Amino acid sequence: MDLQLMLILWSVLGALAGVVGGKLLASRRRAGYLPYIAAGVFGGNIAGFITRAAFGQDGYNMGEIIAVVAAPIGAAIFIGLAHLIPVRQTVNH
Image 1: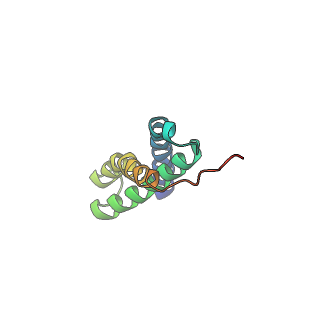
Image 2: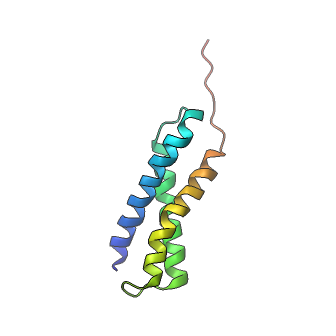
């Protein structure tokens, strides 16, 4: 599969994982969904690149399938790590 199509697919899967992660974790933060979606897209692309490089990239082989499965997993891991970063609280006077 073409790398550009894979990037789009990994980004979409990562964004979906970001929305789900935002729904699950946003009650603890007031940052909104955008940071979770961005973290999901980033994590999905990183996981996709790593698995594609490790397992192959020729056409519709096992490496492409593993990369598609790994993208939301990588996104979830990166969202979890991003959730650990403290958010500055504003003080209302």
